[in-house]
Image (cartoon, rainbow, N blue to C red):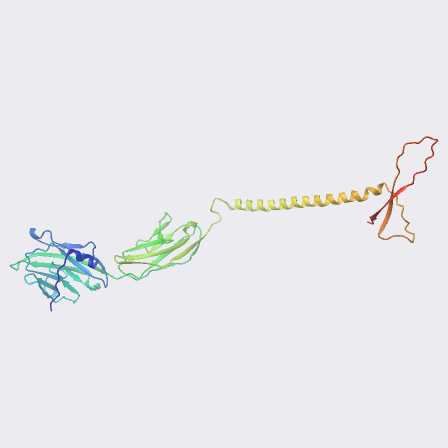
Length: 343
């Protein structure tokens, strides 16, 4: 069975979208092949994706070049060979049906899985079938990470107590764990410590500014995923914030005393106002009686009035004395009656 061969130009690299740093392992090579290099693009590939083992500066004098799985060049490990004389290729015992070999020496893998991870060897023979090059290249295959789980015993913490948050994941090959606070990377303080693998975050002691949403995010070279957020609520400590318990009690007592003083002053002003009005009415009602004579009927009179009594105020005009010879008619008395309610 033959492999399809094709020319590979630099412009085709972007077609695969595989432009990452490669790892390169080399063995002996003569000066004429010193510039030959191989890179895995990408070096870290997600399971189910593609990878290209890209060869640079392959010597034109090669008669045959071969790709092997692993670092063994025995026939059992041969994937494919390319014969430059007639631009043909042959498959080997290690061919899986997902590899394509190109006349510039490159090898393309499709839909890689974990079993494809490892070292691959490129070797070449000159026109006399003598080996003139041997190079190694490695790539890694990773599964996409799954969502981690964030756990905390209590989400409501009293200020100055401690809290521990733990990030759990069933994935292997995790390259990093990152902590987020309110959707931003957590800035560690001197009160925060992380475990050796960053999976446990401890805050001791807690403060009010630690309240908010926490997340952990795990990653490997090909993927990352964050946990669901957990919100921490910090209950303020009344002894913090610059006021002691005695100061707070003094403020409360002062407020109560101030309210009582205002109430007493208001009552005093109200009583004074209502009392002054009553005194004025008493003076108005009793002042005329000091100069009046009660001329009303006696209590035994059949014509006694129950509700009101009449008083008469006598006013005598002061006239200048007339000569003795003048006999002016006597002035009539003027009477004024007013009604006064009985008390």
